[in-house]
Length: 219
Image (cartoon, rainbow, N blue to C red; front, side, top):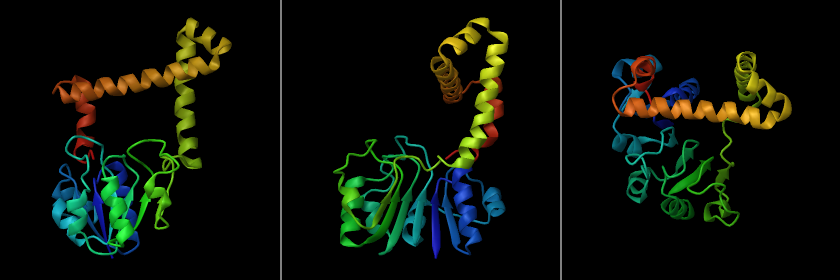
């Protein structure tokens, strides 16, 4: 079987590696994926239209942008093999849900695994949730025991370091720990947004130099 990976970044290449391990033919579409990197990963770099036509399984690992919104739409589905299966654990909005529902209902798409939806949480009466050939989860594909264990030490270290140098934060941590922990999370998210804006603006200084290698396979 042929596995098509749309977006071969940090998560996408892990999925591709699983496919290689299962002796699947793995093809990948990612505008940031170099031919050299594709060879290292053991995948064939292809254009999106080629992937859509050839894949027996399609897995998506891209951010949601103007260019990727409804990257899988009714027209793309028509060009897919009959019996294809689609997995989306990336972002809602990458797949046209109405077109996906019709294709699943008709049998053109054999099945779908969905961790994300256009509107989250997905309403209980969502049409896709009524189909027996859909497996869904509430945007929690990354919530595993291993992932939580890996994150906890890093988060704890940030809290301890902040309390060590900031008496006001230490007091907050003692009186309202929930608010203190949330404050660290919010500041971390804002730092990420600032780096993203700097990169989009073409600047970013040291942030840009550190982030540049990842942009080779950013999707």
